Length: 252
Ligand SMILES: Nc1ncnc2c1ncn2[C@@H]1O[C@H](COP(=O)(O)OP(=O)(O)O)[C@@H](O)[C@H]1O
Ligand SMILES: [Mg+2]
Image 1 (cartoon, helix red, strand yellow):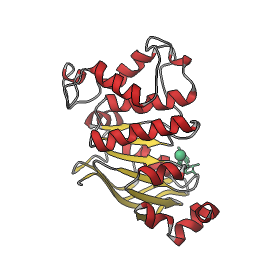
Image 2 (image 1 turned 180 degrees about the vertical axis):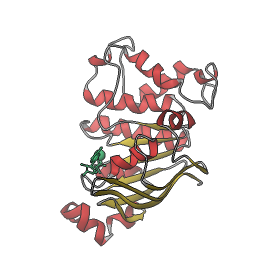
Image 3 (image 1 turned 90 degrees about the vertical axis):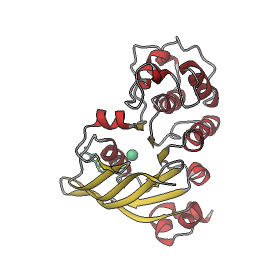
Image 4 (image 1 turned 45 degrees about the vertical axis):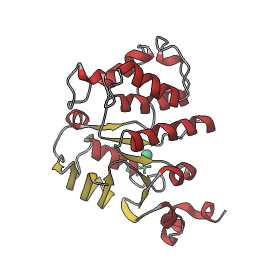
C-alpha cells in the first residue's frame, strides 16, 4: 500500500509546551492507521496540523507526494483531506439533507455535476442511502439536524466526510458518546472508507476494542512524541506503551 500522507519531523509548541515533538510517520492508503495516547498527548493537535488549522513550527506535511505545509485548510479539504471533529459540527438551523450536501461538493477532483456520482456511478442519493444504511439510520432527511441524538450526529459526520469523496479522512474519537450498536456502525463506515473506497484513514480513539479491531497499524504518542508504531499485536505487547497508556487494561 502506498503512503497518502507523510509527516516529517513535525514540531509544534504552544508557549513552552512541546505538543508535537519531531513527529515522523506515514499513513497508508486503503487502511486504517490508529493514533492513540493519553489525554493531552497531542493527538487532536496533530489532526489540526494535517488539516491545516495549525501550521507546525518546523517539519513537513506531505500529502500525495506534495509538501502542503503552507496550504490553507479549505484548499487541503478540496485536495481530498476530510475530517470529523471530536464534537460534531453541523448547521443547527438546517435539515439533515442540507447539512450533508454542504460536505458533498467540496472535492476539487470532480466537477460540480460529477460530484453527484461516485466511482461506481452511483447517484448521490444511492451513495447516501448506502452510507445511511451502514450507519444504521432510518430517518427522514428533511428532519432538523437537532432531532438527532449526539451519537447519530457523530455517525452523520463520518457519512458527510465520505460524501465529499476524500482521499483520506481524519476521524477524531468517533466512539466517544456512542452506544455499542452505534460503535459497530461507526466501525462499519470506517471499514468501508478504507477497504471499499480505498482511502487512507487516521483514527484517534480511546476504545481499544475499536482500535484493535480495525487498525492495520497503530502509532502511539505520549507528550507529543512517537513512542511506538506497529501492528495491534506489537502495540498491545509493547512495554513502553503499556506503561504510558494501556496500563492495567492491557493485563485484564
Ligand atoms: N490552541 C491551543 N493553545 C494552547 N494549548 C493547546 C492548544 N490546543 C491544545 N493545547 C494543549 O496541547 C496539549 C495537547 O492537546 P490535544 O492535542 O488536544 O491532546 P489530545 O487530543 O491528545 O488529548 C494539551 O496540553 C492542550 O491543553
Ligand atoms: Mg483530542
